[in-house]
Image (cartoon, rainbow, N blue to C red; front, top):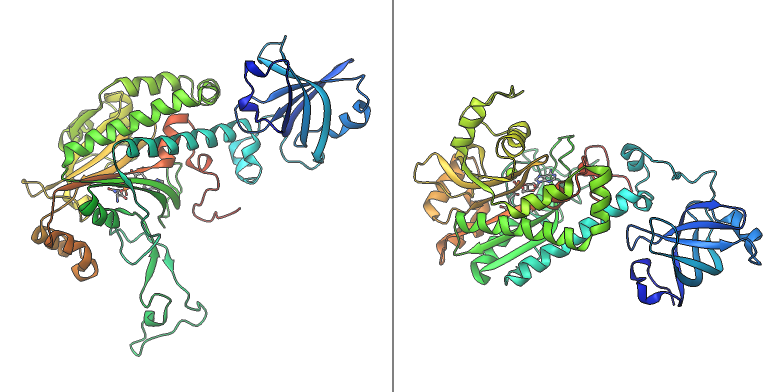
Length: 461
Ligand code: 4AD
Ligand code: MG
């Protein structure tokens, strides 16, 4: 039976075990060869010691090039060498799949992340991308434990939708109409009555509106699924397809929302530090020096809470010259968000009460009639990691707001009915999983923290 390398413990010493994995490297000496094999279950692989006196040595060794898949059986022994606890004294090695070293794109040397993006099907075999995949998995699992332990219901919201949640017109259209012969109405408009859904349909930018409907029945829910944005931003923080976690709480206000966001982030980071120590040690040494103490600091420190208006004042007084000048009413740019979190407060900051004009229609109007009960959580090096709000629960105010923003209330009729029938104060937020992985690992480009990134002009693999 095969044992995953992660599950080899001191209790396995002096027993016979079989491991399966891919060869990372071979170091041959006169009397034996060291073969590093990795099966992805843990950062560190296992070192095999293959004696030159072995009957199959001369025949097998030439086949054991980087990338070859093998099965190896032997006795697990304490390692004399530095860097590993155990090694495997080989009794037998079977080659499962050969790997031609002449054409295999991954070599023992370091490759750039740009190069690795072009071999998306193989890059998970590298130290960094493997570690990122395990960190992403841990953060996803931590998300479920956090919300489940607090009695939130995991809700599956639709991926195809007819409503634009953010009202920002960044949606990908879903259609079965023939693009080379689009049916037209007598007025020469596209005849969507002939389309699959009988009307225009899109990939969702957020599950929030549907989430609100269930929160306004089951009290606390969260979604965790793919979301899509056709924004043409080619940055290291944006993807066209990303995974969003969206909790929504009934009978809750902005303060409950801030408290939830802060404890959720802290829970995820603690879980990662406790469950992926080897991967974190690697990030700490090779990806972002000091990332572990950065996360420990975030876990220990209360987040700063600050109204947008105060943030604008701080930015205007900053000794730093920004590319985009700051005045009340602007949508903060990444450089502003990062200045606040990284340089001014040196910890995560929750900005609240943004100008209504720059925020989505569903956010609750404050008594000043100028700002809404929005909140963005900003963290060092990434900027915005969470966006959320207390929702507008007053029917008349919401309708007025939609019209002011050129949205048609009748298209959101069911959303408005939630305000007609037993409306309650409620609040929630969205966290982009990839932004969390970036922050937690210290990786720089969002395309390297999702298995197969989708961005403008890139939908490979
Ligand atoms: O701030 P956003 O647009 O908020 C919403 O979608 C709300 N409906 C959430 C809610 O209240 N339920 O997006 C939320 C988060 C951002 O803070 C960011 O972390 C991430 O989603 N995000 C992206 N991540 C990667 N690529 C993109 N293009 C992203 N756009 C948003
Ligand atoms: Mg936002």
